[in-house]
Structures are given as structure tokens and as C-alpha cells.
Image 1 (cartoon, one colour):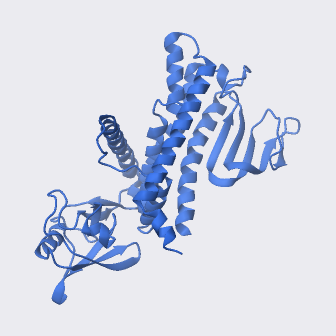
Image 2 (image 1 turned 45 degrees about the vertical axis):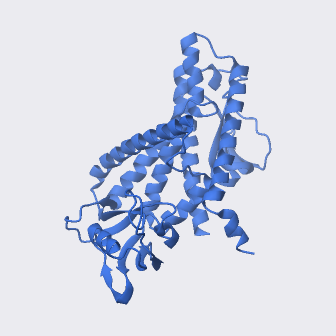
Image 3 (image 1 turned 135 degrees about the vertical axis):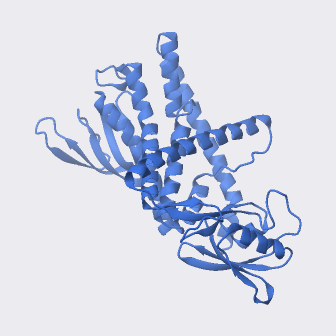
Length: 384
């Protein structure tokens, strides 16, 4: 239940901040926002300022509201929010319509959502650095709270079968005859695993506040880039920074993540175009929900980091020049400036409809992939 609440809060925050960006820039540039909603319809209740009394009046349910002012609504589906901007899809030539504004103003409104997602990520990562962020350190560095954590778990390996997960803190390892070793350095753990290849070992891990003992057998034969268990390891320590330094580090972390995500995205597209199997997985809503559960067990710092990464991903995806996305609509504005006249409105609407349909199809495919990857059907059947 807690995982579901955290998942809804994260998703809601990302969408709400994005829509808030569109809303604020539209209002600041003289464009009317018909409605700004908390959550998605159907509407529970709304409030709109009266043009005569200058006081807010309450509107219940889905009652149609005609007003020169914005109606602020509370809606039933708690997943972020939305903004309805006047003339956003054409059909209005009024002075306060989106369609009648200059290309520069329209571009600013469309790009504002993406910008807010980047700012949110910067803000969250700045908090993380000020609270104390986990940083990788070498084995020879002295640190009071240093620990060895799992940075990667490869599918189809003993580590995956054992139930080891990214972020797990390895406390100790034991083998037969009660041979145990407390883990404080990466090389110590690697040496122990190599000494007991082909034999069962017990790995004690701390995941959040929970401590578990997981059994598995390191492989005798394995790919050179995986290791006997199939895990990546990092020695980490919590490092705190003063607030003024945290702001700079937060911005630097956002830039690094943007470069990494864009590079990964281009690599994924290149692999898809060439027909080769992608080397990385794409997670949909179910995958993100499962990752939320894993991250939630590790603590607040990791939840904030995870939210920041999702916010950056949302921003990058939205700015792509694909119909139905903010980037696609900006692309049409660029074409308009190049050709010296607006793009045919019917053509743009058709392109956006097709783009939306393709995005919906992609979401279905990715969700289906999540069902297979995370064995959701088998887990549901296991209940009965």
C-alpha cells in the first residue's frame, strides 16, 4: 500500500510540475487558461473568480463554466494535474488565445513544462546533496560509514535467482563450516566469492531497515564482464555538502544525467533501426512501480534521486520532435517560421492524432513487456 502511495505521489508531482510550467508562462504572456486542475477529471469541485464581485465561487461536479477567469479544480484521479489553454488546438482568434500569439511566445509556453521538470530534478538533487548523498569511493579511502553496495544485477545469473537487488548493502558473506567475513571493501568481497566458486554461500544484505540472508552458488564458468555471481559492486559513503555547494552539484548532476540519458536513447534507437536486440530494457508503468518499491525500501534520499531521474526522463521524452509531444508542436512552429506561414491546421491535428496513437501503442507494448519481464501473470496466478 505504501509503495502505491509513493508511486502516485511521484507520478503526480512530475505531471503537476510539468503542467504548472505551461500554466504560469501562458498566464504571464496574456493567454487565458480555461482550467487548471489538480488530478484528472471527472471534476469533484472547482473555484473560479467572479468578474463582478472579484470573489471566488464554488462549482460542484462537471458543470460547464463560462468565465473570463481560470477555474481551479480538484479532480477524482490523483495523478498530477492538467491545464486547458485557450486556443491551444486552434479554433480561437481572440486576443487572449494561444493561437494568436507570436511563435516565440507559443514556443515558451510549450517548452515551459519540460523546463519545470529539469528545474524539479535540479531542486531534488540539491536537497539530496545537502542531506547526504551516497558517493562511490575507493577501497583505500577511510570513511566512517563506508559500505559495499550492489550497483548492478544481471538477468539470468545466480545473483538474480538469489533475489539480490540494486542498492542492497552487503553486510557479510558466509560459506560452509561457518566461515564468515564482514564486508567493508569491494576487493574483500570479490576475493571471498572467487574462493567459493561452485559452492553455496550465504549473503547477508541490508535493504532499508530489513536484513535478509540470501543463498546462492557462484558460477565456475561465466562471461568475463559479469563475475561469478553476476553483480556490479561499489563502495559508497554518505557525503554531505553545504547548501550553497549542493546547488552547484545538483545542477552538475542534472547535466551528467541528461548526457547519459540522451546517449543511451540514441544508442537504443540505433540498435532498433539496425534490427539488433537492444542491450538495455525499457520500463513502463509497471516497471517503474516495481522500481519504486525497491527504491522506497532504501530510504528518502534514494526516493528523491529516483524522482529526479524520472523527471529528467520525462523532460527529454517530451522535448523530442515527435507529433503529440511538446517537442513535436515546437517543431511545427519552427516549420512555420521557415516557410513564412502557419502549418495547415488540419494536417497538424492529424499528425498529432497519429502521434498520440503511436505513443499509446508504444505504451501498450512496453506494459506487455513489463508483464513478461516481471512475471506479473505468474505472480497473480500464484495467489489462487
